[in-house]
Length: 189
Image (cartoon, rainbow, N blue to C red; front, side, top):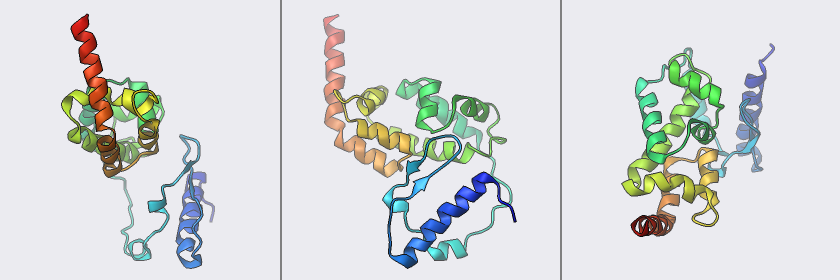
């Protein structure tokens, strides 16, 4: 039986993950997809519960994404004050793939689930943030002067909503400091 290249990658990665439980050998696992460079998989994903694999239902047809996801994308992009290109980086897809997903989300079965999962995490972060901090996320997440670039790395890596919220909580004082700096500059001008 011949496997397509993406399927072969998935099978190889799954075999490596599943065998680690038996070998008691945990080594970094690298995730490869055709849209990005290889990335290390977070340690919490190293182990796969074999019972979950045995009991998993076979997916025969990808679920259609809800139009609400496109609305969430638009809202997040506006509230975070970032461009379509920057949002594509945050979602780990190309700009073209993101445009295609926006125009026909139910047909974008290849990148749709990834986009939706990352949008859910970013939406949860947005819901936890102070409204006046939302437009500062880009500056705090990617600036070594005003924030901590490790938050940006977590966004790029597709960190869970819990991890992103934890970063926000750790950097809350920096968000406040930068917000007050901006409001002071506005008052002077």
